[in-house]
Length: 336
Image (cartoon, rainbow, N blue to C red; front, side):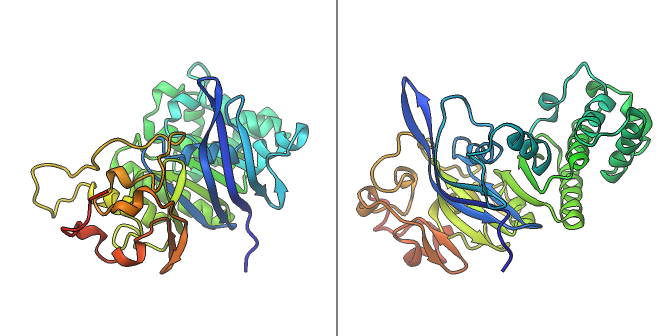
């Protein structure tokens, strides 16, 4: 069995809210091996980006971390000084949702790409420029010398995201944190960017933590998908059947809310109510107030993450409901 590159176990994160510490991440656990991709899926505020930022050591001031958070056997939380700099500059790299917010608009693309090569790679300016052209070619950007002279506003969103991926390649990280890297792109460009990431992962053996709200995309590119709600893991699913055989009612609700050209409907299905705030989780199941399958016990009994099929589910009715979560509740359900 391959030794995990990233090990997260019982991770809890508390942030200062209104003058007191509130827990926003609850007992999150998963592992990630070299060359594999784990996806984090959920609505805004579910905790997926907070998890990635904890891995990158980019938590806001005042954050308190409990639990095990290790990279290659070493505690990420305990990294200090030069060890932390090496980790951030070489071992892990983050690709953000909006590349325009991550690239200085008044610096040329060449300055952005060559900086890491010169500082971390010890290259001369000439050698770094030549390598930057090669990196752009690796991500499908032709005429690299001309692109290096351009400013960010002269490139499309798709090209800028490729530049971000090229910058990631410049340091050859062992772990990529991709925070919704295709959200701002059109469908065809999304496919191109994901193909590039998949090829580079296979070629260089990089591990990837992939954050998305798109179930179909997660099922297509991830070896394992983790569904989060209100700061907790509610489902862990291996393989590509995430949206076809959900193990938790929340996953089923997300699947049903997807646009479907084969489904005749005048209105897009939506999950009723509002997402539960991670630091104000009610007793019992956090999803119970919005769940069509909830019964009275769901509001009092705290569910545990238990094995079911090829994955895990945090639902006290998971076994009972399996196979019919997508068909709607019976007349005796929804009484919580």
